[in-house]
Each structure stands twice: as C-alpha cells, then as structure tokens.
Image (tube, rainbow, N blue to C red; front, side, top):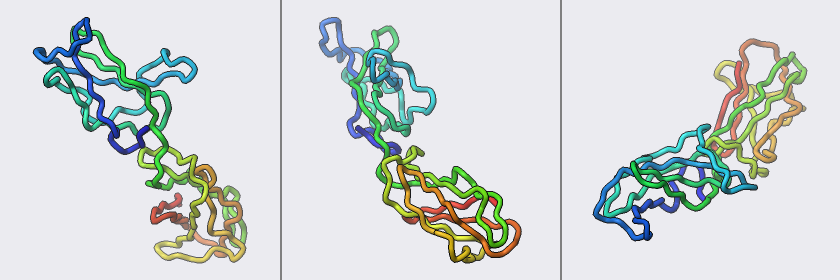
Length: 205
C-alpha cells in the first residue's frame, strides 16, 4: 500500500520480453503507464482512472530492456489499483494489484457547511461543519480523536462567542459538526476561523 501525496514506495518496472518470457536487452522502446482500478468483486474488470490524474513521469525509455518509473504518485485513496504498461507494437503488461490508503497526517481543513443565519444572542440557524483532509485531499475517515477549535473574527480581531457556545469539537470519521455556536453582538461581515493541529481555515463572510 501507498499513501496520497507520496511517490510509490516500490518503483514499478516494466520489462521487454520475447515470447519465451526472456528479457530483451538489445531493443529500446518507450513504455507508457496507465492507472487502472478494478472491481473488488471481479478483479478482471478494470477500467482506466480518469477522475484524478496519475502524477509523475508516465512514459519512460527502456534501458537494458527495462523501464523504471521512479516518481509516480496517486492522490486518490482507493483499492484494487494496478498499472497497465504499453509500448508501440508490443503486447501490454499489467502490474499486481495495490491499494492507496487514506493519509495519516492532516494537511487541510475544509468548511463543507458554512454558518448561516445568526442573530445577536442567538445560535446560527445552520451550524458549521468541517472535514479533515490528507495530502491527497481525501476525507480522513479514520480520524476520530482530533479536536478543532473555533474563534469569531470581527474584522481582524478575535471576539468571544456567547458563553454557552462550545468552541471545540472532535472529528468523528473525519467530520466535525458544531451544534450551538452563538454570537452576542450584531454586526456585518463576521467570519469564523477554525484551527486543528496547526492547520487553519476560515468560513465565508
């Protein structure tokens, strides 16, 4: 397995072989790698991944019959990936299956539900929700212990929420939901800043 935003731990190597599966070193060819994802219930049912790009150098010239791909990266977490290798005039080859796991380090906070409808002394009609994202922008569904804190911004200054507000929430499967944020004073263009593990984000105005 590998993690998003990181090059593959094991470099894929495609080799030129004759019909007897012997390495052909006298020929040189340009080998291109394509990322496939297979259905878990039918590993022969594979299709090219087009939702997110395969990052890195996808075409390599063979040296002594082998093409080594040293900087390929896949940012979308998922199971049953494999590579297809093609070269002009030759039958293609397939790699073994592998998974890309959700990253273990928080890279970004994203507000997925903006706070809406606050009145002085009252709670937001729509409370904010945040997700924790890894380096490949996958929601960290394995994250269930990290706390995120909220602060009210009036202009560039931080102002206290109503005393009954719970400023801190804990991520559950990568999602943090506030339920009772309240503001005391009326005003325009206030925002909320959120912080977790030295990562910050700000709500819309």
